[in-house]
Every structure is written in C-alpha cells, then in structure tokens.
Length: 403
Ligand SMILES: [Mg+2]
Image (cartoon, rainbow, N blue to C red; front, side, top):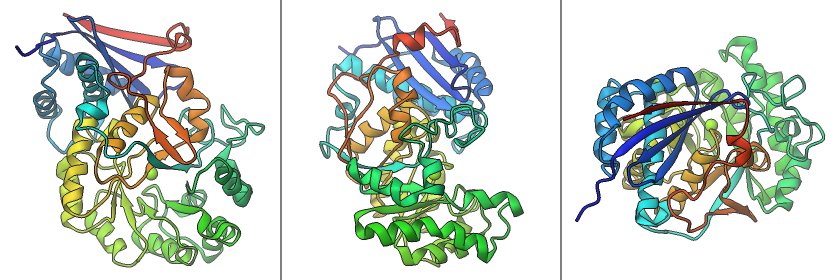
C-alpha cells in the first residue's frame, strides 16, 4: 500500500543576520517535516512560497516529487525560469527530498540511488567569513563581519598573502582552492577592458602559489560572469602558464555561444555555471560544447531533482559535475549527498570560513570535511535540523501558510 503523506503546513524563515537566505520547512500529516534553502531576492521568494506554491502544494501527496516539480515550474512561468520562482521551487524540492528520505528512514544519497563513493574530494573557495552573506557582500575592511584575527579570512589572504593561504589550506589537507583576484578591477570599465598592469596584478597570486607549491595545489580561476569575451580571453591567457584547475563563469551566461567561443581559445577546462538553471538550459550548453565541467547550485538550479537530472545528462556528454556551495548549510548538505551519489562527480566546493562559523550557527549537522574530502552521516533525509540558537534568535521571522 503506497503511503500518501499530505502536506499540511509550509513555513519560511528569514534571519536578519543572513538577509539573502530563505529557508523552507514543509510539514506532512504523518508528523514529519523537511528543510530546504535558497537565496537572493528573499521577499520575492517568500511571496511565491506562500502564494502560488502553497496554494498548489497544501493538501497534496508529498511523495510526488517529480510531478510537483513539473507543476510548480509551469506555475512559475516556464521550464527555463532562472528567477525567484525557480529559487523558491529549488528550496521546496530540497525540503521534499529531506522529507522523503526521513519517511524511508534513509539518507538522501540512498534514496537517490546509493553511494558511488564514500567521500568526495573538495576544494576550498577562498571567501572570508561574511563574503556574500551580508548585503555588502565583501569580506574585507569595512564589511560587517570582517575578522582580521580569524584564521579563515581567506579572501583578504588571497589578495595579500596567497602563498601563506595556500600553505594553510595544504596543512588542512586541501589540494585545490579557488580565488578571484581579477574581480577588483571590474568596476574600472564595467568589465569591458583589462589593462596590462591589472592583468599582471591579478595573475600574481596564481604565479606565486604555482612557484611555491607546484603541483601540490590546484588553483581555480573564478571570473563571476563579470568580463566581456576579449577580456576573459586575455585573463585566461595570462593565467594559463600557471596551470589553473579551471576557468569559471568566464563570460555572461546569457549567451552560451560566447562561452563556447571562450572555451575554443583555451586548453584549460571551462566550467559553468551556478548562474544557469534547469535541464533545458544545460542541454543547450552541452549541445553547444560550451563547457568541460558542469557546475550548478542545488538551491537555484531547481533543487536536488533537477541537479540529479542535469548530472545524468552531463554524464551522457562525457562531462563531470562540480556542485556549487555558497548559499547556506542546507544546500551544502544536499550538495554532498548528490556528490556522493552521482557517478560523474569530479569535485565538491566548500568554504572553510562558513563551515567554521555561520553554517554551524544555523543547523545541527554539516558534512564532515577532513583531509580534503567531504562525507555525511547515514541519518535519514538530509540529516540536519535547526539549532536552538537559530530558533530562539530575536532576529528570526517565520511566515506560515497551512491547510
Ligand atoms: Mg562561481
């Protein structure tokens, strides 16, 4: 006899300390609940969750993940949506997977099809403690949460002491890291031109780390979709002698032909993109041969359901996946479950500054990151819950819609 747990209540959480973050909690009539998460334009995301999405989901069977995805994407206005509705749908999908795993009494990686590996290699994204968290978005002098005395103010470190940073990561077991020293020059021209001087300055951290560490540390180049095509090509050519791990989001993701053109100019792998959502857009990216490695953010791309479909499609093109982490702790946990399950995972992103601080303030469990690898427990679902600290905070607002 099939179980048909009915969705009875949908809550969403907003915490002033993490103003971009939206966490969703979905309850069913068997007493279980699941957690999901997304970020950016939080007011629009909350609105979609409590209006259109709740109107559709309340009273429905929580087990019908694929059908709910399909219906909510239609309600959101189309299958290639990249906006607030798709981010809301991503958070809802995560919560439904958490619920599904709990109901089965199995970790999410098992209900996805089981482990392809016990642990996944990670690379450290060298964000500081508050990068992207507060509205300023930059962890440096002047930001809300700049902690010059903290050991993991890694964004500041890659600008000022890249070799010290690489050595510190190496000592913790990391063999790969990601930095974005060219971002500081973007505003001069809105990314329309990079001077020889800035090219030289931006390349320096890659040169210094390569000279000091050789093949002991792979360094990825993050370009954040900030540069036009000729500037992106110039940056890639400047860094290439230092054998970077990949070029990420080299150009704006709205023209995948331009990305394919970028890729045709380099032998270093091209990776994209957390800025692309749903299988329909990734299909186009793969058909255009625009990438060597597929990156997506589970909290933006359409949840675990869509990430799993895209991972499988990528495999059919001979392309590995490297899931994005930076949204929050629930997305990171979902990432590692999928990374352990997918047959074609290359590497998983992690941010040690976040794991050591605010990720831990929100939830009771995180993936274990040790010696450059991540793993998760076999607790049911995503295996985490809110901390008491988070739930009792007077900075927290909870919105509820119920049957
Ligand atoms: Mg990125």
